[in-house]
Image (cartoon, rainbow, N blue to C red):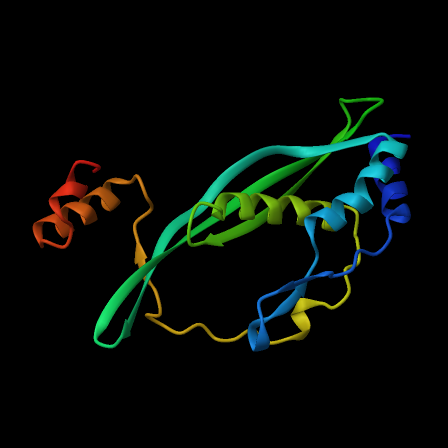
Length: 187
C-alpha cells in the first residue's frame, strides 16, 4: 500500500476517542480529549499498518508574557502568564517506502504561569495533528457554543522575553525604581 492507502486504512480502523478529561471547574470547566487517549488509539493502528508519525518541524508563531494586577486590602500584586503559539508540521511516513509521506500543519497554544507553556503548545499541536489527519471523532463540536467575548485591557502585553524591547522595558523599570538593585545583575 502507498501512504495514501495506509492513511485511509488507519482512518477507517481508528475508533472514536472520547473527551475523558475535565479541565477547570464550574462555568469555565469543559471536557477535553487527552493526549494519552489519542496515542492509545493511534499507535497500535500505525504499527499494524506501517505508518510512523512524528513532528518534523516546529516554529514559534507568537510568544508573550501577560501581566495581571489584582488589588486586595490596598495591596496590589502582579502575576505573569506565559503564552506561546507554535506551528507544527507533523509527518506521516510509509515505513515500507520512507520516501512516501504526508505532512500536516497544525497549531498549538500553551498558556502557563511558569515554564510549561511550550510543552502544552507541543502536546496540543501534536494531538490535533493526529486527530485531524485520521479524522478521529471526539464528540461534541466546540463550534456549537459561542465563545465568551474578551475584555479589553484585561492583560498588559509585555514584549517577548529575550528581545531588545523586553530588555528596554526592564531598563525603564530600573530607572523608575521598580526593580531593586539585586535584580539588575540578572539583566
